[in-house]
Image (cartoon, rainbow, N blue to C red; front, side, top):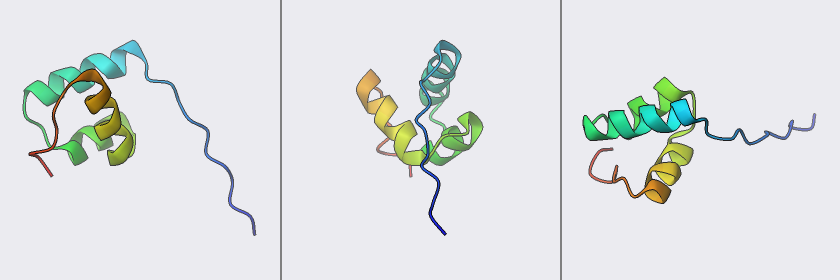
Length: 58
């Protein structure tokens, strides 16, 4: 059986705001990802593109 292709979802302004807030609170990348219902990789990538660091938190 073929896998269904996943469609990319654009980040909303609300999600970006919440990502920034949670990153400032030093929340782990995994917890942020679950809260936003995104993959950890997508969350880390977005944070990196915004200039936020989640590297020290695994």
